[in-house]
Length: 283
Image 1 (cartoon, rainbow, N blue to C red):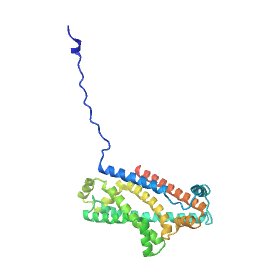
Image 2: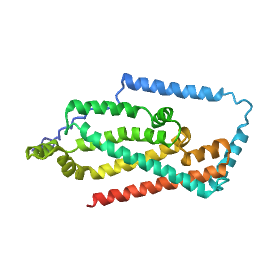
Image 3: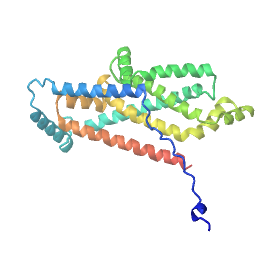
Image 4: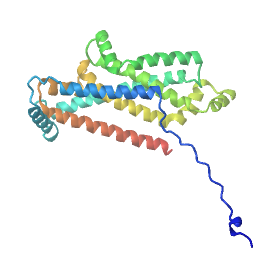
């Protein structure tokens, strides 16, 4: 008689896989946690021991609600009038477009000279270092520096915005150029093609969509900076009108209308950028 238990084939036990810790404990993570907890405790202590100097919180919130209501629900042109505000807005848009064009022109030239796969390594490294230093200083500081040199006015604003735009677009364009396969460029050099022929016949058609994207991103940044520079460097424009309406005359109705105009222009720039980029991508 055959024992049925001997015919049972035992399945081998699958080995248990070791548990993988997604977040291993380390000194850096511990320090980050300690700093975060410390900041939370300091913030909580500061808020609970803040000297309000007799300010009534409920009244302050009521005044805030009233101000926001005047700005965003009851906007109007105020004493300046809509034609003057539109003229100031157009001046700011022209300033941002002009500085973006200057930045794109010189930025492309410096980007070609700074790209690792195109030019001498020492020349490219020198340009990249200089542009990094320029980018490290905010645009508003450059505008103030040029306002000391050239005096308050549109000249200081144009130089300040253009200076930072060139450094910004040099880095952006050079990264796009460096994304091209170096063997393609080397093969063109072997055929005897000249440097600028390679740039405009091979590199430019390849990165034009990326250049359009970066240029319009910088245009939006320059528009925002032009608003700030308008008051800081005496360049006028919608930034100066915003400063006067909000900080001097306290006309919150006009402030709200200016904010809406700025938002409208920002959306228009974004829409144009998307459409132009689609045109180049569909070619």
